[in-house]
Amino acid sequence: MAQDAKSPKKLLRNRSALTHKVGYALTHPARVVPYLRRATRDTWLRLKHTDHVSYYRAVMVSDTRRNPEAAVGSQTHERWLALGQMQFDYLIEHGLRPGHRMLDIGCGNLRGGWRFIDYLETGNYYGIDISPDILIAAKKTLVERGLQDKLPHLTLTGDLTLDFLPGDHFDVVQAHSVFSHSPLEVIEQCLAHVGRVLTDTGFFDFTFDRTEGTEHQVLREDFYYRTETLLHLARKHGLHGRFMGDWEKRPHGQSKIRVSRPPLPSRGQHEELARRQRQAPGPAV
Image 1 (cartoon, rainbow, N blue to C red):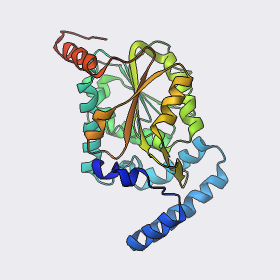
Image 2 (cartoon, one colour; image 1 turned 135 degrees about the horizontal axis):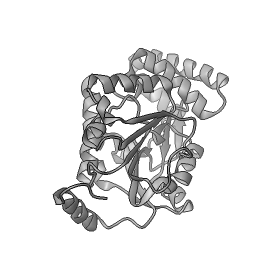
Image 3 (cartoon, rainbow, N blue to C red; image 1 turned 60 degrees about the vertical axis):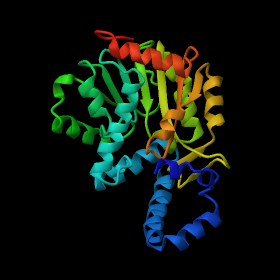
């Protein structure tokens, strides 16, 4: 799936172009009516909500009422579990330890979050989301998994300034499938403020829909960016960034970038650091 989604041909595709839409409709006729139905709904929501956060919160209200797992991009429960496991395994391989403090931006209904809550020490998981409906679903996941005693922080937010969080606090921050639904001004807002809450040794991972052609969006729900655009934004706000090529090997349609306050270690240095952290007794930063 990932290799197909990131093939050279698909990375050049402009899904907003009329020629693409016509060709897609001709080859996938059964999807035309659902697409038109969603386009009509989204147009109505954009008329009611002029700023993107309010608009996308309304999208999540609609989607969550039908199926909370589908609202976070998982069409089956098996896929929901698999995507959460993928997030978890990747960060464990990259040195996440139980003593670390983690911020999960766009935590959704805890697709990956419940695994992090279970793994991290009590109180070390912070999940934020713009949707009250999906946070209610997150609390249900927490109860279903019996993780109440881990005391996770689940907080509603209206922006990504992170102003209510302490500075120099988080070892790991992630935004999984958030920037793929965000216009550039929302992404920049996050990059402008995330450095404040990161520790000197911490990092921020985010996924995005990558294009090597024209940057574009579909229905103001799905946004496609060039890697250099996002790396440039990170540099603008004093962050060091790197495209995470090892994520590309996973069966996930999106790409990943990692940013930090100081320069990131080289791939070899990172692997050695992660190995030492896995072997070290007790919490490590």
